[in-house]
Figure 1: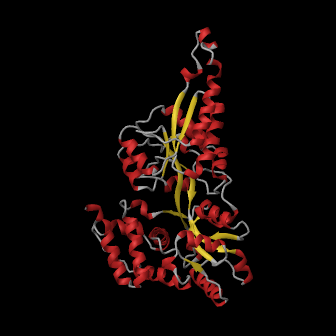
Figure 2 (figure 1 turned 90 degrees about the horizontal axis):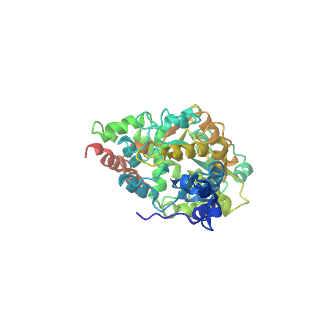
Length: 423
């Protein structure tokens, strides 16, 4: 199988190889003359298959630091397009990389972990420094197969200058959020931007709000997917759907024609006061307008005491069951999950940490980070859904935004979920 290696990683590793081999260029090495093994002969090579292209440079730096104290282990970083598909194919064909990153909420990963294709790390010392709430959130059938490093969540981006100039305090309840939107609208300011042109962004909003506001939603949807209930049996779904429509009365005129990139640009240029999406947009917003005074707050709940935020593990490291050089692989994971390494890895993006006592998280997401540190979190509920179902939910919700027909929407959700696990 052809492997596409990152150029930066190849350069760094090639340089390291030249250093190791420097004493051998003229023929026999000094170690050969003394009868001892050469450095090359004792060096173990492991591949680190990591899925985030934005992490390539910092990972190369960490690999270089690791190899300074572990010259007998040569680590080769591999980052490719469509990494989840490539990982699945390689593990399935007994070509698994020695160390890899993946997502514990990913349905395909969960299936392969349950099949025994990934090493069970539940009681491994590698899990010792993981935040307990994050370790629990990452479990698959009660077991941990990945060491969580970085976390992702979503929230409301807001323009601090627009809030301050209109004397608006950060909302902590749904009623306060709507009151803030009313006040902004009365001042001639577009309160919210929605990127409803893309069903993926809609899907993220629906999944987030279902998990945050619908009681016992995971168990209920499991019953529906097993043919034991219907969506319309749950009275909470109608007001939930209505809430998705209600907040859009405070959006821009062309919500259905607005893409994610459009919304990001317009928020960055001050055309709206608020925008709901994930923390992954922070860097791009700051890059688009370095002078923008913005931050995020958690999406409010009806009662402030019920406030919590969805968390998914954005970077987590594991080992394949049939992988080579597992002792060296674990040593590398141990290094990558130290406080110092995690702080360096997360410094650029500012994502919250899955490892204890790590100083991470940009100033813009302080309130979200505090919720995570307090354990006021819930996992993404779509981790329990079959592949592709989340996209269907996004498309059905997008259709409701056009028709405003809640009854038809609930019927569509029922068609999507009902008995799907038995088909």
